[in-house]
Length: 386
Ligand SMILES: C[S@@+](CC[C@H](N)C(=O)[O-])C[C@H]1O[C@@H](n2cnc3c(N)ncnc32)[C@H](O)[C@@H]1O
Image (cartoon, rainbow, N blue to C red):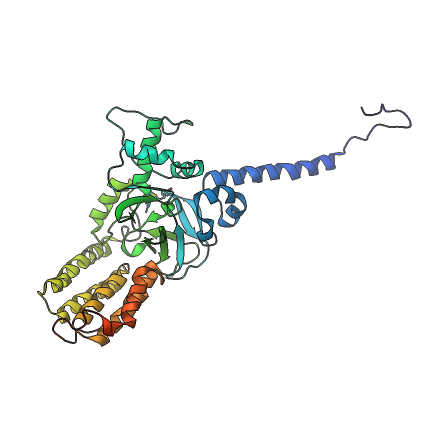
């Protein structure tokens, strides 16, 4: 008990106003800051630097922290009309690794039936479930006249299944698991929005051996730019692309290519489908219907198209096929030139240490021992004209 106040023992003076005020100004902003940090964390919108401080416990359950490369590269932000998206927080160089991520959930490709998905969902940790269910969806596969509340705090098993199914459909990526076509959900990459043709700046590649997804910068990206991938084969004409994206992903694409002025859009519609036409012409070489020289002419036309359209994805593969033609026709000089180009672009698209890139390097280093070297009519087929 405190002693009673007497003349010798006067009462404690009341705290004066300035002291109370300084206490107020210390505690209230702190509470506001903590609430804001909590809010950002809940909405997956915390800047990379802060997220390091606030999240490592739960993240270790979601990501392999040894390979989490994205902390200093991008932020997850809200973007008008797009939901969330990723923005570069520093300049990113072409070929730089942007995301390296293992799936939080995998499922066989195809129709995701309830009996198949429920056991998979039950095996997720609570952090994985939370991460999965926070992702976006556009359609729920409800039965006719069925209503479910996917916003309820405690989801019914049916609502949980429908929500997860919708989310997987909207966010999963095709991967190869033990030789099987499968689907994988990657919570980081799932926040990447779409752009068509030359509008996107990232390419993703699944690594069988590591069991992880790698995403590389296809071009130099400036700080503040949005990181974008393509959800579809965006070499189709605008109308087809827009219809496909509306039907599957529930949005109307307004990317720079879909928003070109009418005349330029018409030109782009003319050019983009030529990739498929030229490739079909090129593929005649495999049947022996055209010469090696003609085949290389088609690849050169494709290459020129990549320059004219800015669509640079797959340059690695096209250069690789040209190198194969040159090798088979015993044109070692051209084969080496194409192989160098293939290594450069495969390295950008899939990483310099990917199986595809290292195999190309091996072929270049051992061209003389290639089992099909000069196995068809020997001729100069021609190298790349860049
Ligand atoms: C894989 S998620 C991408 C991340 C998503 N924005 C989010 O908030 O989680 C796919 C969804 O993002 C939105 N989206 C993607 N690209 C878009 C774009 N270019 N314009 C508008 N919405 C887009 C669509 O709602 C689409 O169904």
